[in-house]
Length: 484
Image (cartoon, rainbow, N blue to C red; front, side, top):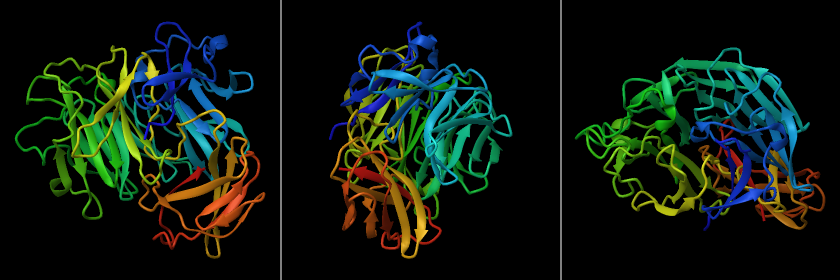
């Protein structure tokens, strides 16, 4: 299967305007909404800096039938009728320049929403029900999240303050509760494995090795250094430059039910800075990962980088898991750049722990901000005119839950299926649907809803028997709809 059309943003570094793209087949950039239509040319959205290399890079997102992109102090929306980018919102608390993070899908007080962050503590939110934007501030300055990965877990935002910051923080926008823990983070990555949230963290100065944590619900509990137990012969995983967080970004991702840590390493115990990727596999045998017994160093699929020199001064790695093409057979890709001043990112396909990653192709443009996705759902994938579907609500019912959704794209006679993952990873199993579907002329046929019109206005409902899917009351799960 080919990589679907992933949304990219090009943030020019030499005075030009930002540009929106779809990445086709992992290599070719196709400008959107049309050729030679820059983002914010009338607003002077130009001259952005090297922050495009840092996490997170999810400036562009699809929400229902809308595509938004955040550039400097404006949120732009694609207008396919005029082939232009229209201003949807202008920040009111300040001018974030390129120093911002998002946008991300989240549910706030039961409402499908988007969220983003800028400055020291400013929150930008989009209400999907009212099509409106708002801003607020966190009760504590947590340091700009622009260089750190932002992760949504159980509709709670997790992030880390960098640029000399000292906290990993988490915030519930529905309840407004804020938690922080001093950990001196320089580079972080989050992932869910068997329902537990994990964090891999590079410290700001020392120690030089990355460390693994798990979230207990109230704090982060330290586990151990990455690579120590599976590589007793010497330290291969470390960072050196304490003041350049873009140089030491790890990646943590669950693939096919196992957790993998991708960290920059050395070929030898000294020298050869960032000469390749070290890859470690984890599979929790108990309630959570035991680093001494559950860690395996992967040697058969080590890095596409096998340099014997210190040429990879500013490496960066970003993951994209494709659950949009075939939810039952997802594929994982990585966008990797070896040094900050190189021209091109390279797309690599993960072929499992027993095979080398393969190069899909070179993305021939500089200043790119790739999309990153670990949760499926297709929020970072878009093609004009192709129908898509979005869950708008989930409520309790007498025999389980009722799922509400809308479809977009202007087509009729479509089929909607819903996929579920009871361990909070990307949904890959078909959900058990029950009862009578409502909305328009829709009918339920087994585990799918048929005769759906993608008109963007009709709300459809169908029952979900989550007990038959192995779930229990109070258990968390991830759902993702798919339209065919």
